[in-house]
Image (cartoon, rainbow, N blue to C red):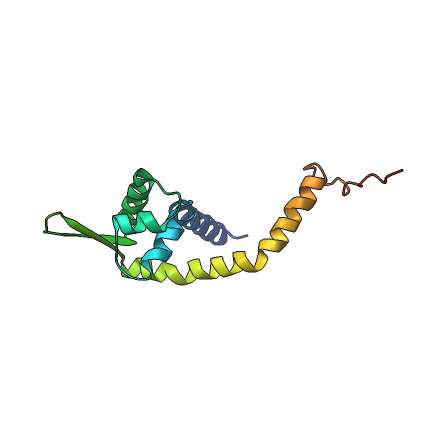
Length: 136
């Protein structure tokens, strides 16, 4: 590899790593896909995302906002109304996230099979598949 290729490869890996640190967590992809349908209020999202705590939703939205993927609009009403929506940058993430979701669905059975095979071998990469004992 040339020095230029090494530099590009390293820079590319770092860029991917940084992006995955944001969108690769448990909640960010769900929030991005939820907001792809249009603006949402905080409590509406909390009800729609099973298992997310108020604190985790707050942290996730703040991180997505900091990264320029989500915008937050406060309306001067009583009580205050706050809407969250994807920015143009956030919308550009929708297609790759959907592609990843489609890949995951298409390959879920194969991954589960590979995991079961690995576990049958006792987690040893080069061990032969475990034999089931024969009755008798």
